[in-house]
Image (cartoon, rainbow, N blue to C red; front, side):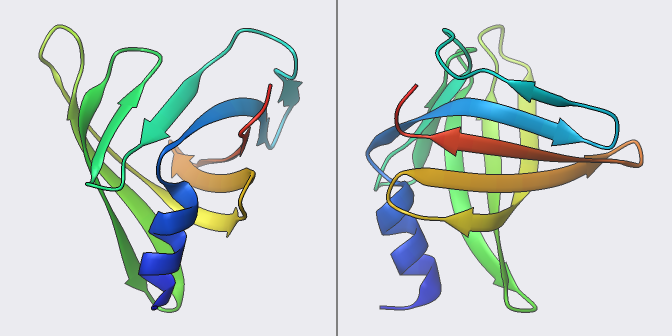
Length: 112
């Protein structure tokens, strides 16, 4: 089983709850709070707590894995984004992205 297949197997069929966001100026904890979550299926579909529904793919580039999401918001607007997968285990997911020059890391857990 390749790294993409292993990652998808760990990612799929779970609810991932946002526990922390970290950027250059702050760290926010959401542990124990009703917060954002995202689900990934083993068939390549995704839905989150904001109602964004669509498809995801995991791709490898230069020995790094990324999640690419191509979805629609509840009002039908396109929602396309990607995250670098920094770490994944059976119960923790750490992803990062850069937007407007600001590097942000999000930590998810299968419990909240």
